Length: 218
Image 1: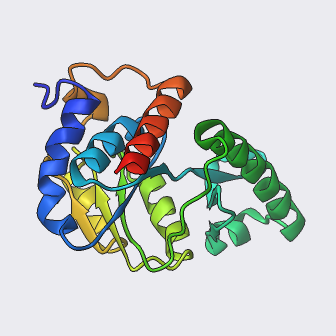
Image 2 (image 1 turned 180 degrees about the vertical axis):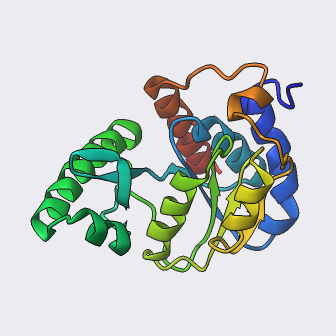
């Protein structure tokens, strides 16, 4: 049975879980695109917080791209799985080539989403990192690891639904985890939404622009 009508409904209900936490923290809401952006928009709107995107991309082993040897964020920060790099025999040159290629793609996407708006300063800030749900949590782990290098005061993860085990594991990486629904027998994220239509780039841009305009007015 679905828990949420759509991402907007999930975002509004998730925001209710965050009101007490956010009080006095002046958080920045960072959404993992694309599905996390409608969630983040509702959370940021409810909390009166700024919204932006935080894009991470897996660094695949050359020739075995499904195997992750690290992850990179659009701000250039990255994490490396040294054990996988060593086991796969990846050279420094191969790693740097992969890193440069994925970073260029991330920056292209970021420019498409953010336009000319400057990237927010995250040092010393309280971050609420959101997505529309987690299956394995791999992208969220990578995002947290990359964000740590930006020096935030605190990172809270907020998702409407995720497996109970993923939430427990995330608790070792994030400072706080907010997830109102944590089924042991999970399935897939889309199962918990009546409407889980794909979020397009145009919608991401529209929501970010609307959030930015609201923040400018306030």
